[in-house]
Amino acid sequence: MPVDWQDGQALRIEKADDVDTPIEEIDRDFDMLARLCESGEPADEEDLERALQEARRQAKEQVRRHYGAVYVELRREGRVLSQVDMMLAALARQHKLIVLTTDRDFEALTDLRVENWVN
Image 1 (cartoon, rainbow, N blue to C red):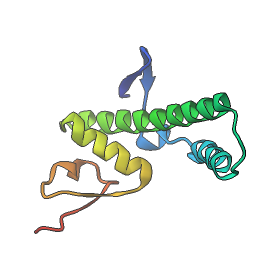
Image 2: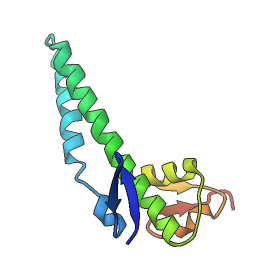
Image 3: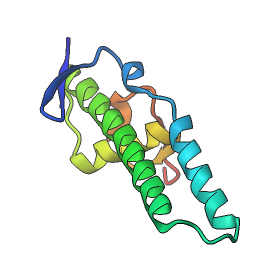
Image 4: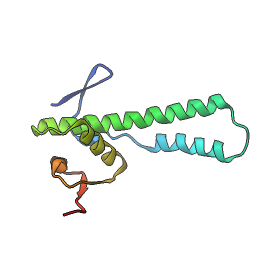
């Protein structure tokens, strides 16, 4: 069973689905921020800052988990990608985006949608 690390603790990941957490929490925080900004009412600056920090923390946690899953999957297959490519793969996976590339580096991640618009 693959092992990855999070906050200094061993974290076992069986498959990519094990790291997906609902994005509704992040959406809720950003919705609250948007309502506060759109209301035109003077907002408590501390509340805004606290909500923004929490939304950022949750977004970072999501991408960290996806990055860890990408890393574990590649290690399992004996493949290596640069840290930048793994981060791109994690962000694409998190937001269900298509990766546009002219190389074949992402083929090991079969669930990732990859397109080459040049060739």
